[in-house]
Length: 412
Image (cartoon, rainbow, N blue to C red):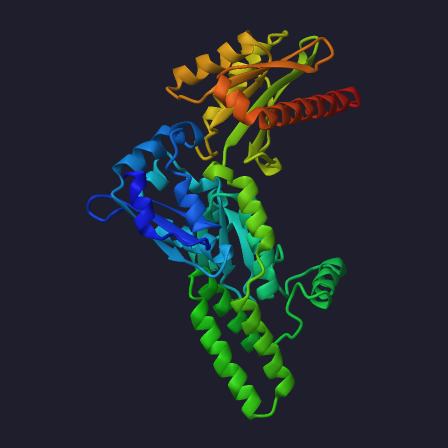
């Protein structure tokens, strides 16, 4: 598709979802946007392959036209994008993707349904089919989904307890629910009908059917007003206003931070820690769009070595990491060390037929970064993220090693 065609599209500076369509009007790729105009234009730069990937460059060249759907908020764009990807499974959205580690929203089949965040790989382990009333997702960005849920919780009050409501076995657990009711996180009125309506509205909201919710609430408001229940009618009116004017500034900011240039770069950084070759451990840390994703960190106890060999230990860690096909693949790997460590990582990737760039952070004798080796353009563009990832991997590896040593020394 040529850049000149953009002028004919009249893209609005509004949130929504955009669609790259192929020769037969099939959806090749779709995405959400804080600003449809700015986001779509970002695909038509000379360095799109470098900013995004060669796959996205290929998709843009293959596309014949672009369509879009405006939404009232970024929150609704995020939900609509997820629903459409799940329904249409566009080729360029799904190539090489494995959603087992992505978040899903689950509404349980219980007397008081809970609304829970569950990773894809845990869905079948934690629940049987009959225990799930509704399920939405996957939501690829954990950071963005977390911000989205904060907004949803302001619109709808629901339970998200670890165990079913009413099955609490301790006074502390019951007290926590009561406290959350008092501060407005959980429903205050224990009306089964009202709570069931809330669950229905949450389901409709995540099905991108906000207008249906508003229509139902308007009818409810009129009914209450006719029966002179004015306070209750006013509460419903406020709920309608909140839905029509969703406050998602925090989500806009997170979207801009995490997806700047539509490039949610996942960096995995690795470091090895030991004491004169003893108790060797490895650590993997993750950043997504420059944000630490601590839930994605992993620790490795080195099993194949008895003496100090950092490059061999790094190879072991990478090989063990790559077995986990359910973990999202990185777009960049950062290793602590110079050419030897960088070459070791690249050797493992070649053996696995993976083309992931590797950079090495070279340190001085005080373990301070002195230079970064690897692709120059990548280093220039992501220097801050690379150094952050490397520092975090070193901290995480040292913390794990010290904890392991302490446990061994205190062992009777």
